[in-house]
Every structure is written in structure tokens, then in C-alpha cells.
Length: 311
Length: 311
View (cartoon, each protein chain N blue to C red):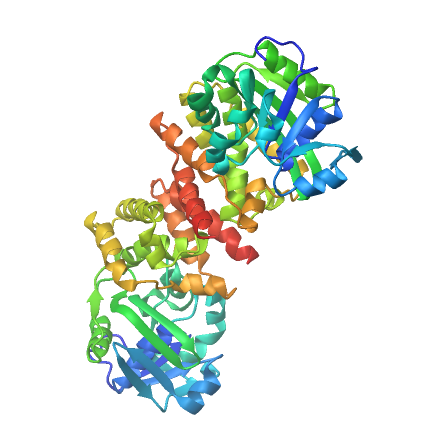
């Protein structure tokens, strides 16, 4: 889908149907789009009971969902939405080829840094798009997604300004009342999201503190703010003009999340892989390479890397 | 004991008979000195079975130990050895007065910064001494101490050069084969010990890593070294000329400790109070006040403070 102005009639595949894939993909299906889901753990539950999304006091039921066990069964599509954990990126080498035709776009919703680069190196930069989800969401049981707070999504192109297809994808989400926009600087949006993930996902593991617990502890809240400032400095050195006030806004908007557990905290508690390199390792390396001083992030990354390796 | 040249014939009280008090106090009793122990949890076990110290392949049995439940029963002594956790310092206001006569010396073996100052403010600076124990030691059950590695002790005066009494106390430990010395700069010795405690006790809680696990993880070992460098800079700004090579030596000497769990790790695992302010908070505050940049320590302190508050 190169210069398309609508997602109507396009074939869409969602790879990785946890909370994020289930929510953003499910909402496209809810909007009438042709969405196929690759599922593993949830396959049987979704085939028999469909997908349920609890959002803003409503329950959205999708009784018939096109769920598949392999991408061969799905075949070539116009748009692949990638919502796999970054720790499973190696699996994409096997999962993506059956989905890719001449004009297939690859849209990663994954966290952290390095994902577009991974896709571009293998399937060509022109296919690659990314989106940042600012959302509090949990998959509470197979086929059940709970949307708790926030929910905006920013869609962009890899190292290019927003395109007609980015706008078309954003429009499709807006039609189902998701706050979506096309953005010209995807890399900057990644850093904006990281400025939240680095401290809040990080302290959820290192200090076993959910969002509310970080905000309620003077020391941790101050540390979260300082980690954001380290990230702001790195982002600026990498060419992204994010204002100081963004850090305050990130702190302020977090109060409404209550005792939300970031996805990394849930992963860590359940001994599942944590996206250590995408969220802390790669930003630290890129920041330091750009001349930033990120000593708090260095400490946090070393501690989290050890905790998640030995969990 | 103001200008005494020997500990012979002096009355000694040990307050806080965990691993450190039991070992250093027990070894003085083993050397024939008159030592009374204030005990709580271990009182009955020690009264019935005595104290046992396993050290360097030997078992030292002290079948009859003068163990008491109150300091009133002990009465005034010449030397009080304080081996209570710093988190229980407030209890000293009640425990110490019965032990103090006109010439009573107060020797704290406690960790971290602020302990001599606490004693000096209440009972006079001239009484106050401190000692740093570089030792791997655990109290494995009531009345049983296991000495695992290291074992040296440095005895000094509070803000004064080493005195005859400091030398006499060190001599008493040397007579029972403990590597002991009198030191002229107690504050510098405190920082030398902190340079080990800050990273190794700290990462034992934040990263749940014992000494061997820190040394085996490239990231944590490097972080431990960086935390030592922050401490070295702070110590120098506070007037202590500790050479760079000391950090390397601290790392190197730690390999022989194997999978030793620092006392803070055991405290944390058993949900006992951890000496957060003495080991991380006060060094961070003093270092920053002296102009040092201690961002890794700042992060570590915030994380540990939260973990130990909510444990």
C-alpha cells in the first residue's frame, strides 16, 4: 500500500496478538476492516469465543475473528501490523515472508529502539512504518483485552515524513474513536514514548513499583524525572527538539493511571522475556554515542539486565 | 580508658550480638578478656550452650559466656563495643547510660556514616571511637557465628589520631590472630569500607546478586566499579587521599568471597531493617554537599529505599 488514501478493502495481518495487537487490530476489525490474526496461546479461545475488548465502560464483542496458527494460512497482505515482543524479533524472519507481496507495508507497534532498522535491513526500508501506542492496556485472559487508560497512537514512516498510507491507517483508527495521527518524525515519537517507558517500565522492575507507587515515593518520582531529563538530553543530541515541559507533562499525565503495572512489570513477574535492549540498552548506547551523560540509565540498565537474566 | 596501654583487666560490654558483635566480642572473650554481652534473640541459646565461632577450619567454643538481657545488669564498663544495626540507633539512648562511667570509651563497629556523630552528640566526642570490620561473617543460628573470609579490623578515634587505647584494643584482637591495627584517620577508613559496601551491599538488594553474581556479570561488575569511582571522588573532596588503585584492589579481593551474601542482602531477604541511610543515603548527601557527582548512587539509593520500605 504505497500511496493509498484509505485502508478500505485492504488485507491486514496482525502478528503477535497480546494486549497491543489485540486492541489495535481488534478495533480495526470492529471498524469493518479485513483483519487476520496470527495467534498462539489465544488461538483456540479466540476461535471458539471471539475477541472481547473492554474499553471506557463498554464491551466490544468480536464474535467471529479470523485467527490463524501460521502466516502461510494468511498469505500475502497489504499491511502487516507487528505487535510481537521485541525479544521475539528473530521469529519474524520465519513469520513475515508468507505475508509479504510486492506492495506490502510493515508497521511495527513495538517498543523501544531498533525495530524499524531490523525490518528495513531484511525487507527494504520503503516498506517500513512504525507507530507509537500511548496506552494502558492488559490482556487479562485469552481473547480478553482490558483498555484501562490513554490510548493515542502516532503513525509514521521510517526516516521519511508522513505519507498518504500513514494518514489512511491513522484515519482507520480514528473512525473507531481512537485518538490517532500521522506524524512526520517517527524517531522523535519513539523518544517521546521512551521518556515514559525508561523510568516507569524500568522502576517497575528494579524497584518493584507500579506507576502509582513511583509517583507516591518522593525519591522514585524524582529519579523518574531525572531519567527523563537524561533521555531528553540524548533525544536532543540525536536531533529531536522535545521541550523540557514534556517531562513534566509525562509525569502529570501518569497520575490518572493509578496503580497501573507497565507491561514490563507483568512480564517480569510472570518470568516472561523483558524487552531490555529495546527499552534501556539501545537508548543508552545511542545516547552515549551522541555524547549524552546517562549514568542513572546506565545503572538502571545493568540492574534490569541482571534481574531479567536471572529471573 | 583514656591512656591505657592494655585491655587486660578492663570491663567490656558488647551491645548487639549478631555476627559482628558475636565474632569480635567473642574473640576478645576467647583471649581471656572480661566481656559481657547484651543479647535478645540469642540470650537463652547462649546461656545454655555458649557461643561457637567457626573460623578458618577451626571451631572456637566459648561454653560460658556472660550474657545479659539488660544493660542495667551489666553496669558501668571501661569499653562499650557497639555492634547494633544502625537502624536501631535510637535504642542506644536507653541502652547505653547504665554502661557509662567517667572513663568509659564507646567503640562503634557499625556500618556507614553518621554513627560516631550520633554517639558524640549524646555522650561526648572524647569517648567516641570507631572501628571498621572488613570481614565476611554470618550468624547462622542463635549462638553460632561462621567466619567465612577476610577479617581485618581498623580501630581509630573520632576526629583524632590513633591513641594508646586504640592501639591497646587492636593489640587485644591481634593476640587472638585477628589482623587488627590502630588508624589515624577513621573517617578515611569509613570511606574505604563504604567503597565496597555501596556497590556490593547495594547490588545485593537492587539486583538480587550476591558477591559472586556481581563479579560474574560484566554489566554489574562495571557498575560496581563505577559506583566505587563515584565514592572515590566524594572521599577525595572530603579530604581523604584514597588512590585509584584501591577500587581495583576492592574488586580483586572480592573474588575470594565466592557467593557471599552481604549482610544487607540477608536482612532484605528476611524482611529485617536495612541500613539504607548509613550506607547509601548519608554518603550520597555528604558527597553531593562536597561537590561530587554521584548519579549512579542516587539511582541506587532511591531504588533501595523504596524496596526496603515496601518489603
